[in-house]
Image 1 (cartoon, helix red, strand yellow):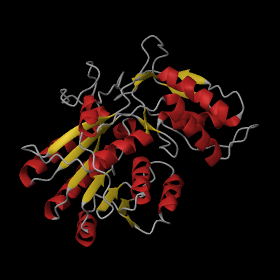
Image 2 (tube, rainbow, N blue to C red):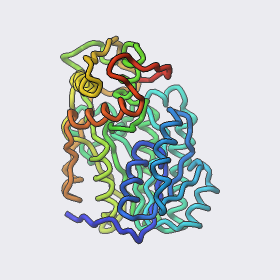
Image 3 (cartoon, rainbow, N blue to C red):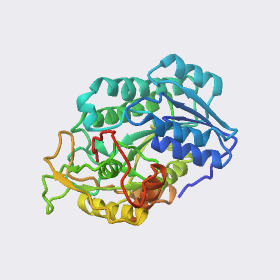
Image 4 (cartoon, helix red, strand yellow):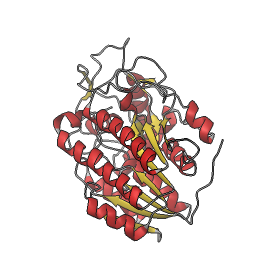
Length: 357
């Protein structure tokens, strides 16, 4: 185990700072006295007000600076590196979503490919101690061997989103080899929690339910062969990132590595939904049961995600373990409070949801 506490003397650059993971990571860094430079383009892929709410909680910290910009803008990224000279970079800015990548492929190339290339180029010309970037469990595609291990074959992505994340890993490996940039990729497994992404299934289910609409479940109504997901609570994700910050891969010939960050405990989607119903019932004091519509699996979906966390645990002595009962209750309590859901009567809701999981 090689875990070093955060160093407040370092300068941390976090892209995607107004996003779900970016916000919670930046908040943790700032609470521990670190200087954080946050970059985000505040796009409207989902509710921009939620992104502003996250930022408003970061603004009071004296050591927080915000730059509104797109990582696909090479000049902006270069200027940011030149001005602030970050020691540690965490690239979380990316266009998310599996199904959305089928409808809008262009934005994935701009953000996930060109944007990440710009980050690597900046790290090349303004050397950093450690570059951490978001990959995804989607790189495992439809692999049937479980749990997924970092050494598994991942050359058969089933969505453009997964292809861009696999490409990130390949390009990062090349830059680490050529320019000796200590780089770590993180394969996140279905992250959830309060103040999360409205396009994710659990959030969308709550939106639909309180809007008086049925939820869509993409498993053909096949409960015996239900979808499995390795749902990972946001606090566990942040703890994993923070521990890895002081653990750059400097002892290997090519200073590049990847880690899974997942719960190592996949749940059936229907069990997850029933747990969410109970959590919302606890939060509202009402019996919150979703109206359900079952549909076929969507293009790009995979039947199961299941992470091995052995490598992460060996490297930094940590493995995610928050049970969904605890994590979903925290989400439900936040949701009811944030949106003003009352115990009697449902709030008005008009925003559509993709129901992605």
